[in-house]
Amino acid sequence: MAIVPIKLDALRAGGAAAQLSAQFQAAAGASIPRITLSNGRFILHNSLGARIVHNQMHLDVVIGAVDKSGSRVWWANKFTGADDATPPDCWSTDAITPNGPTDKRPTINTGNGVRPVMSCAECPKAAKGSAGDGTDRKACAWKRRLVVFFPDQYDQPYLLSLGALSWNGGATKPHPGGPMPFRHYVQYLLSCGVNPAQLVTRIEFDARQTVAALVFSPATDSAGSVLGVSADSQMVLVDRINQSE
Figure 1 (cartoon, one colour):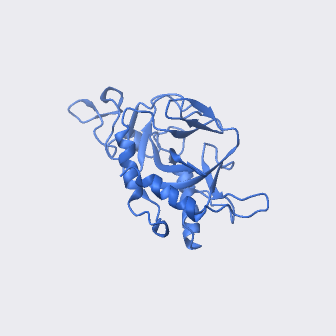
Figure 2 (cartoon, helix red, strand yellow):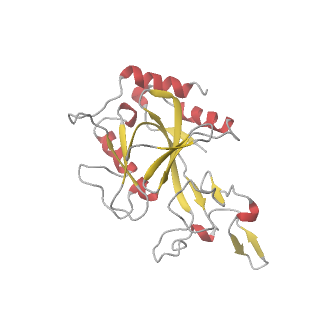
Figure 3 (spheres, rainbow, N blue to C red):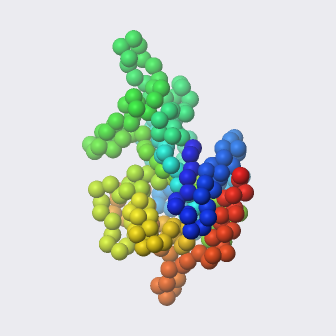
């Protein structure tokens, strides 16, 4: 997985997230803390494998880095609404080469016999309409992963995977002045001269979608003021990422 920073030039963080990626890769075989979605709730999985249901319907985090290339994940059985219920049958960390067990991968007929797929490009589960629900959705879900931190808790990064709807909203237009899909949200912040690591971001479920999708907006206090990240805290965040060097 290649992780790159989200334009943190003002924070002097060039290349820091790539170093964080190395830290995650060094933890191969260990349980990497992550955040998943299950039946409209956020689920926190700590480094010991404990599964904790977040007690609020939103999540306030500081965004540290974004997966550069994207990834893919596929379950042979029908999606149940809980993405953390069972391990996927096949996946790809770069959306190019399958990483799942050969005997569980989708297969293709080459004319000389049937074999497991060797690339995502040739996989029938990555084709439009393969979800089998009458839409153009693909059975193999595309993902982009974020590295996020809870405010003032930079000792513990979490991974959060975003599907296509959470990333760009699909055909659904963003709320005017309201919560937006991730790509629109980051573009909006940058157009205002603000980078994502300078403020606390609120993540919520998009009620307009029929499947689990997330929207993003600046978190605010009870007076409606945006919750910024102090300069000192920004430097702590950068130092935390740099520790993986």
